Length: 116
Image 1 (cartoon, rainbow, N blue to C red):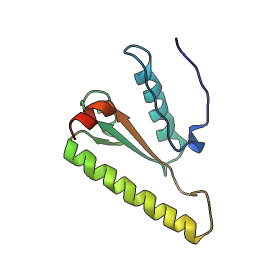
Image 2 (image 1 turned 90 degrees about the horizontal axis):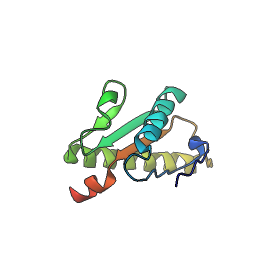
Image 3 (image 1 turned 30 degrees about the vertical axis):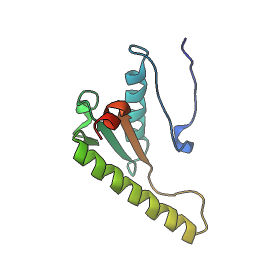
Image 4 (image 1 turned 180 degrees about the horizontal axis):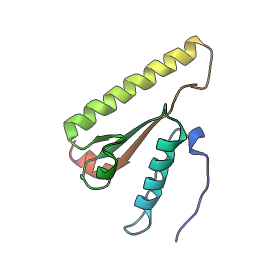
């Protein structure tokens, strides 16, 4: 069974796409990646591909991480950027970040967890 949902991803803090093989996960993710890349030049799109298959085509226009060590470093840096943003928002009494968004796409998270 397939469920179609429409939402504004710019107001969502997290999104999980799951499904069986052939259900369109890659098509959905690729559409979202393109939209995030085109939406705002300030956006940062980070692609994590532990299986080395899905995100190769984006290497020239987005940050693509494939090695476990590089993935761990990238995720730690993202965490630090987010913490800095939270501190900046706290100082300015704002609940919304005014700069670009950071979008992190992880393909095959199970593969990443198993290789940890």
